[in-house]
Image 1 (cartoon, rainbow, N blue to C red):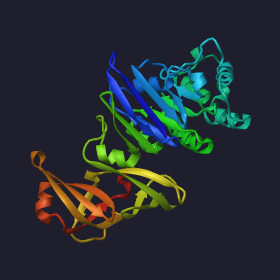
Image 2: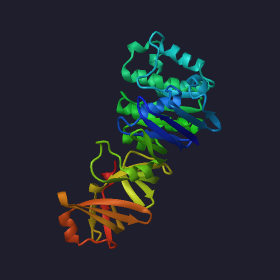
Image 3: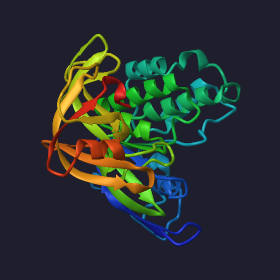
Image 4: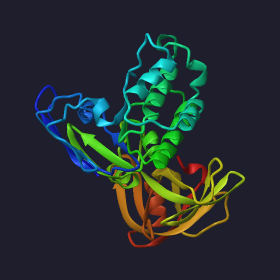
Length: 349
């Protein structure tokens, strides 16, 4: 485990205390002003908190909390990036390796250069690169080190969607292959859903919660203005994929989902909005591929806008359905009664 305690009164009053797994990818999620960058800097020894303690795999940074980054054997991607403008991209990479305690084998470095599309940029200087190109180089400089911990602060800012997807997949395989834990700071929930195994949530200078990603997203329902309405995340295992339809197994049963090609056995995570689940008393033939029998656990009437949020349970899985007050009345719904819920294959996000 990675255990930490940091506190200070000025210039930003905060008290961060908790522990996160020393394996896999932990995302740090918080609204602006909650202390993400402050905690990031504390981890790297770049701040001067009033009290501090950081423990990683028996290595304690206590009185040595200001130990330079190069001596901590950490790697970091900052925003903005920290490339040196008067050096070429190749020289920036060589400099990163010079100050690393250990680096990846040359074959792995070459693979990263190819995957991050750095080869055409090697002779150029950072001031001639676009923002996205600079960020890809900064990510490479951090990843070529076989460090104890990789920390990334808004590392995908300025990148296009295709580059983001490529790098998210690359980070997942990198963390698994080299057993390097990653702290991934972001305010984009979709990035958290795509990459993270664990989640660290901050609020007003404190650790609000930490735990498995899906559990915490469902518990706290963060949106930061991105999502409207009730929703829930699900973890699933791919059973098969054919003609765009992915058959997955959840704790609540089998679902058929419309998504790009997946491999059997692959773990996926997806979100269902309550407004995309409808209810019926009897199953009927229709274009909707998912019709599942559930039990109504709770009904929340939203009198202000004439809606009802119905909580449904199938085995250990919970689902939310948002229906109109008229539908609620027509179906004569009540807690404890069985019902069929309908989910379009295209409803997932």
